[in-house]
Image (cartoon, rainbow, N blue to C red; front, side):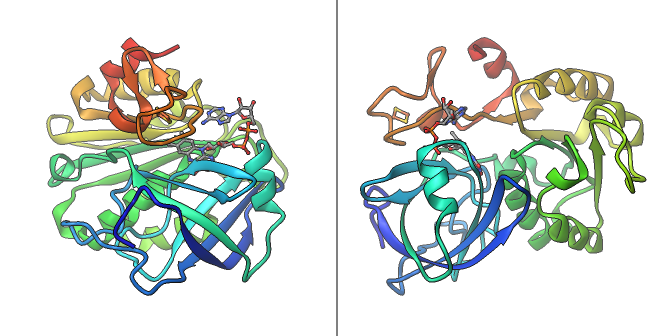
Length: 276
Ligand SMILES: Cc1cc2nc3c(=O)[nH]c(=O)nc-3n(C[C@H](O)[C@H](O)[C@H](O)COP(=O)(O)OP(=O)(O)OC[C@H]3O[C@@H](n4cnc5c(N)ncnc54)[C@H](O)[C@@H]3O)c2cc1C
Ligand code: FES
């Protein structure tokens, strides 16, 4: 499929319950050429989004979490929120849905090369970070030290546990913290911002990427200021209600920006300006 504006039919090949409210869906193209690669040999740039749904039920944006090099399938994690996401949660293996995209800018892959990286995420914000980790793994020699700081409310709400475990084999240091002590949990407890002492980077040659709920902006301040990473080296992925995905409906406007066209990834100082 060459035209990213047209919805294409894809078939669900795997559904994995990640938590009581989040399911991971893997889907594959029905037409052999459906997942076309871009000039970087990627099906999407980590941080871009696709619109997934079904005719008659609507569409919603999701950040793919699978390797961007993978053309046989794509994976998304869907948290139940409203009409479309509840519909997706009702589906089973073999069902067909529609997908269009990828849209948006994604993380700046050229700029981040050769650098140490701190990735900060929380809640259901991990998909684009996971895709970025997969990209880093494939190009491991081009990156320095990589940290993933991930905040979840409870151990049950930690998503992509198996993938996070695999990332260790590639020198990706993931540190997960939960909000309150929980039975059987021996890891860190508290805010993601408390994890700053665990990080050792070359501040002159480091970048940060972030995707998570609004309150995590505070965590950014508390982590990235002490680490000395400047605003133009901090890339934040924003979520906004979307409809068209292509700059026509104005649903996603924030400040003077369209999240679908100008983002969803912004410099940190752009976010401050556009934060509402
Ligand atoms: C770029 C981008 C990437 C995203 N990636 C993921 C992802 O990987 N996994 C995931 O589960 N969700 C993701 N989301 C959020 C997801 O798109 C929404 O939860 C979904 O659109 C809700 O659709 P719905 O029809 O089920 O709910 P609706 O019936 O449209 O709304 C249900 C409730 O959710 C609110 N809502 C809807 N969309 C958003 C939004 N984008 N931000 C804040 N509140 C919203 C509505 O105001 C309403 O209160 C992403 C959003 C964006 C913009
Ligand atoms: S989603 Fe329609 S303008 Fe951005």
